[in-house]
Amino acid sequence: MNTYIALLRGVNVGGARKIAMAELRSFAADIGLQEPSTLLQSGNLVFAAEGREPQALERVLEREAVARLGLTTAFFVRTASEWRDVVAGNPFPDEALGDPSHLLVLFLRKTPRSSEVHALEQVIQGREVVRAVGRQIYAVYPDGIGRSKLTNAIFERTLGSPCTGRNWNTVSKLAGMVGG
Image (cartoon, rainbow, N blue to C red; front, side):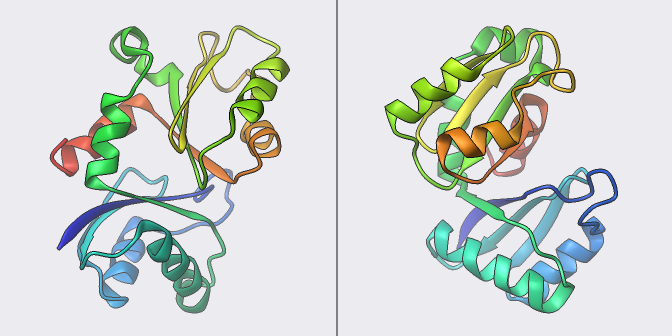
């Protein structure tokens, strides 16, 4: 058995794509995932399953969420090992310690090309700073995320990949759930 983290994109935000975490855990168990647990109300699911590729799990979760829950959303799956790499690869350790709620990790479906990352850096209008590491973008929002013009839509359009973000507090709590 391997341990995985699945992040649901855009659930329980502004009344859209609502799902109770108890319902998400029940859904995961119903499709054969073991020991499902959740964190917060923003769609963070930890589970165990026989060794499967994260991309295959994403497709299964998305298809089954539509069929069983009527929920259309993207899932971003990482193994426990990949999650530990996300934590270890953080290029902003000072921000993680001093201001973790303004450090965001955006999880992508693909590794962005350097030209895409450069294009992203060029569209930043504020004091935000970004770094790409694998299939993640780490973004520091010194003036706050809510007021920033650097939105998920800009990330997706510039990088050519859907994404979902979690602040460093959530990333750290999920790491604790998978032994990282």
